Image 1: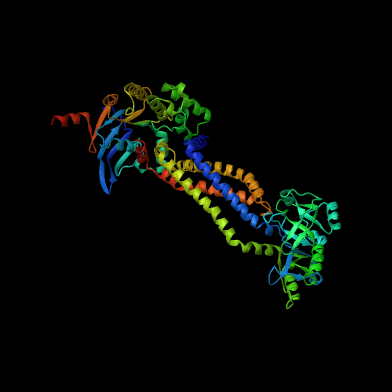
Image 2: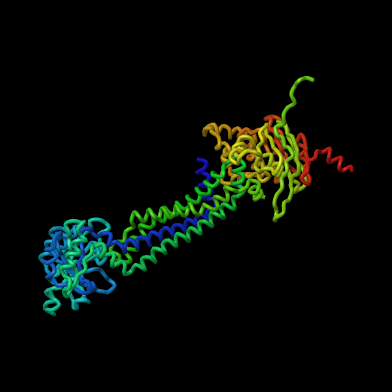
Length: 385
Length: 240
């Protein structure tokens, strides 16, 4: 009890110094948490990928499409349960900065394949009835204050012109990791409009989404599909949905690595600040430590006093920093809108924050703690004079 | 012959030497010191600055080790004890009184006195009883919740004395206990130390520059240039 009391009172002895150190820790732990959450948001798509889902795209590039006729051939491959398809639309809603993903889809198979998107049955039925209808995610609806029945006009970029949609359904995610910032509409609506403008560009899809019966057969099914279209005009590349998503992340991997490094640099900086604080503290109290040793307290007790104080300061900073991470990340997510479809502080990030704070507390106390523990009593007592 | 055995000294220092390394040079501080202190003695150690008084006191208190010689306490050669054994020995055997009191500033008078007892197996209630008795002995019962910064120098030294006696040690070492006090406070502290010696039978070894403080002791030894001598020796040398 006396030991804990001594640690606590020592930690509060120089209130300004402790407050500034805690402030530094709060900023560092908060920054670390936010940067790790940004990294996590980058990988959110890959994290949400189902292991049985494959994506088949044009082998040359994602910007090239594939004929709709591939659908039936893929469906016939042994091990395939369902095939759906989607085309990236890339329309602008009011202003280019209002970016959100838009996909023209085959609704029945698509939503059957993505049970993580929860749509009310009556809304989904209304969407199916309206060829110009759209299903949007809850986050997207919240960002642009859209509700069922609202008009949603998009200015096409890949597919020029103004496209009129009506919000017929709003989907929710099965959990907080589900992306609810997307818009889906009927591929048939896109195709019939394209057909009117240029027949040669009609009946094309961006990607095929393939649901496999057995997760152990994904490699085999992928190989079969790609073999099927070998030496055709549109050769295919089939990979798991996770690999497909990671492929996107890899395009910006250098940035992700940089963010990750910066997050740890912040921790190293606060470690230096904390180590300096503890070194000053221990040096000032050398006489007290010598007195305690003279009274019979062991070197381990002295080292534990310094370690305890350092960890206590780090724990206070970490507790405040972690507590602030949640509201600040919510605020940040609101500021960036749908740029990050999923921006949630994960349990893993909190554990990393705790471990980093604990590491800072322990490492910062290592050298001063050892020095104080090893101080010769006679020399330490002379420091008081 | 009456057959009664002569009492053994509580502290028996034989041919002790100690030197320090300063700037690559070895500076001898104590050379061939031999001294006996008996239980219940009140010994004053005097001498000019740098004469080795505090060094000798540190050796007696087991917070430093000699380069040569033996130092027996109640028959135990404390120079041969390990650091851990020595820490345990100090906790149970020696009470310390320092010139600058050396109280822990973040602990109250009560908590400072209680500190050495946290190394014992006493219960919280027993510790409280002991601390209250010790603070009553030094006349500070009403100052228990006060922090050192809220006490005068004399009061702080009395708290330090209470801390020194709280474990009921056989030996009390005092390094310039009145060196930082005004005359009135110094007299209070010296009176208290005299009571510890006469009423409680504590053996006291005190280093001091203060002649009045030294007069409180039963015997005075002088240290000069690392050598120990009695008052008679000093008088004889001064006549020569």
